Length: 269
View 1: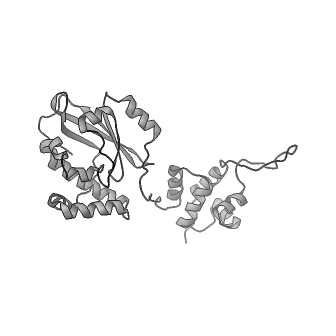
View 2 (view 1 turned 135 degrees about the vertical axis):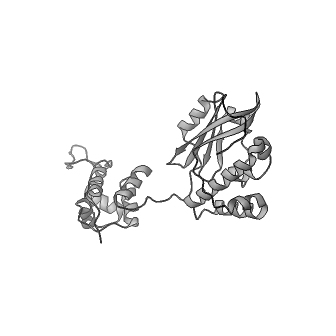
View 3 (view 1 turned 45 degrees about the vertical axis):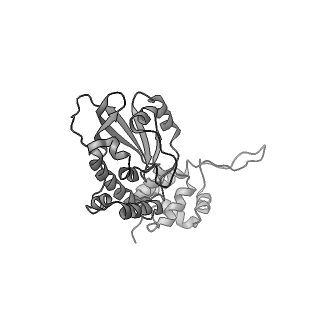
């Protein structure tokens, strides 16, 4: 069995040194610790592995660790998601797939929406294609967030139910194609997600249009778009949308900018 490489061993050593120590030193005594961070024994105990095995991991002499050991080490080292994923990659393993995207919008992102409240339309949706937030400019352009419901805030479900089609005009068919491809991508990220599977089953049972798009097997991946939307201030207007991704929470931020030189023809990609 191949061994974990020297980069993996070095990363373990560096991260162990950064784990804060909570030992209680009696008053009047000095700590006997000579190096920062946890001792190997303490880290091994926290990860529920033997100190001998952990020592070999840090020395680059141990067999390739299992995914279970990697997950235990990440927890014992108190790694952030990006740091945990780096640990897995150093061990030659793909990072773990989260069970579902987070539902709470990051505070800094909420502040950005408020700051751009009427300057630019901004929306946030999660990896299940559920809308999480819209600022005032986006509500004026796209309408307020629908009331909570099973699929009421889902972008894919909205693509095949009114009034989305009326809002997009002739772009409705292109948006339906885009949304179906994004649903296929979401199912690839969360293959066991009951919510996404139920959404796919419901649309397959109720929408011939969805069944036609689904049969094409298209996968979403576009991170910019051009849409012609009904601007409440000036009729139909071409908007360019740029999509930013918060990988840690699997949230997608779409910023809509009016394009005065945009084509009058309705297009969506």
